Image (tube, rainbow, N blue to C red; front, top):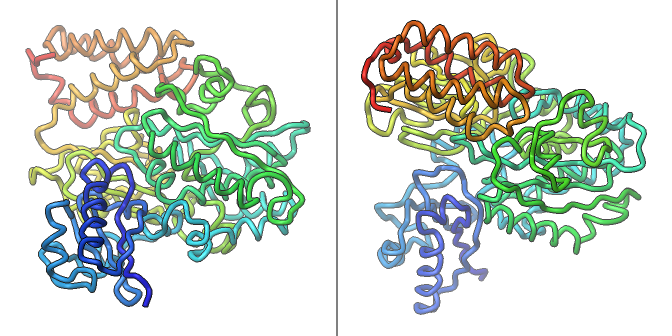
Length: 516
């Protein structure tokens, strides 16, 4: 009889609340009692309020228990949880937990399910099918599949991925590169980290396919230094793939070569912008480059370069495996496929929700998230990171769609949602947006470098009640200069949260004597 399989996450979020201690205590207790059970470390399912989530395979069905602490281990074993026994922490079959059951998991289908570094486990759950399909196709056929799927960049602008690939594929150069930007710096976001720690081979597979499509032979994954667990996992994943012949020469019998190296970022938010990341990869200070030329024409070391983020590249294998029409069947309008929405801030059930585009903010926050953690009425949601709009409670029925959000002067960005209840001071939040830009600006262009600094000063005067109307007019003019004159989205988008706060919460800017 095979050993009972017990799954304990090794995701950074689970580790932060004691997953290692739970695993170690379980392992010691299993040995002491001489039980026939094996502990497998996985990624997270994304239900962060239930971490550490421990699962047990009972006749092919995983039964979940959580959140589990090391102190719970003795009572769990007494309750025969290894055979699905009843306990106060028992949640039933994992796949039937409503939060998970109501998602459409394509990109994150394996997260929390497999051992992240077990290639056999990866293959048994559908891995490598996309790569093997791509190995039999001409480069232009791969690119056409991506175009046909409607896949767009899962970062800020939502640029069509296939068009970017086509541009690079048509460029004439002896060397081309694929660069994955995993410098996930937006507030409330953790999807990149979760995927790299829970299913790293999916990212590698997407990058190799991208290399096949554009004729690139070298790839780099640029990971923020604040993600040590993701860096370690991705480095091991590259080693596993290299030893298995999935990186190197003649990959999957295709006659094509591709190699990947991991690079650690130095902690700069601006390196989330593609050209600043390329400067950093070249060993320079990360600063935004003027465009044109775009990276697909002249990127890393002046060569044609594809820059995509983690979620974009991780969506690629499924498209090549199941076809463009399968992927395009999800979503709405020009927003096709699924997005990993991340619920954070003042939220009862924070975590990752993968849904097709078109789901509403209300569904995500109320149905999945359970409303505010404080229980107080929701006042605002910031979508798209620290440079995204503050969306008022009156607009919770907005569909999560690139065009719908653009019409509402908002952006989806990387899918991060930060929730605020009625106690939030929106003038203070607007001031924070300006402060953030002043600190994180690369300093290359005047509107961003100087504009954000002056913006902080103006916001401070407004919050102190000094000539409020005059200073608000000055702030609005300053925002216009930053939008129109900044070199990149850092300065160009900083006014978005400020102006949205002014529009939807004007009363907060009329308070006087607010503490700075």
